Length: 257
Length: 177
Image 1 (cartoon, each protein chain N blue to C red):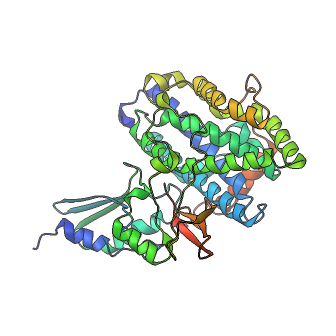
Image 2 (cartoon, each protein chain N blue to C red; image 1 turned 60 degrees about the vertical axis):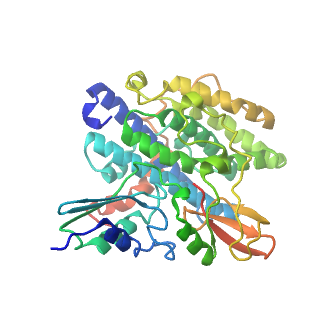
């Protein structure tokens, strides 16, 4: 299926999904890139920089799909909006904070993202299915890595464990937003873009995580996500990050790389 | 005028080095998805190794530069039509990697991680069935299999770091993906 044959309402819903996914990856990539040079150990500095670079790359590919679908320029979509124009999940509104917080966020995000990519792998919209096939292979490494860190901190003694638990308790409600806040996902299911509605994807994700959280004695999710999962209101921390990542472009919008 | 052949195009492509690991060419890495000759038009489609690889534009430009003038119209495009996998690296490419101190990827993601990337949600794996399996590598310096994974990530997106317990040297592996 190509962009031309999509009904207008399906097209709008697809554009909303692409923007939400792209903004998630983009904002997470920028938060994690803040560890470059100051990660806990040198090997982790290398790893987190690669994770951040992957996410920015995935965001770029998704912004390009959106530009093909709706017209416009991928860089303009990425950098040309005011903070309230971003549709990332509330999970990405939190600042980098400490290492346990970064591990908790990435673990929740990567596992939710894997569940989301799973239901998009057979998407009837071929340009998206193709990019998702490629992203899933790369995200496998993210899952491996973050799961190793989760175990390490959970079994790492009082301080790492208490920091990890506190971070998970703080982040869980907003993590539910990664698989929420997508409008008209039922239309995307009917059109064969999504294999299941987002609520079902979220249940599948949580059911998959439960045994592992229980094994490690870590807290689980609250019953429902908060209201306002994907903006337009975002935190002051996100507005600070936005100021950072748009600074170069705002200083000279016509500049070429 | 002499007619351009596909094999001449492939020979030219084999002269374009990868910008990050110049011992191997874009053909050795299996980056070339399609070569199409249609009258005046030569079209080459390349597969990105990693979605976020910063060398993609460099690779596309280097290929376009090498092919320039071979046909009146030369198009070089990146495509996600099929996912590039490390299984696409040719036997010759693997030899060149090994000779320059890089371990070639040993097996595809399917066997390395016990998962088929094409799996749909309906046949979905549990979240953690993939986790206990780690990539393995043979030391490119001494040939020992007694090696340990040091870091899944490395100096570029496509590299993984290992340590050889036998000759006690670090080495990099082209990432299994």
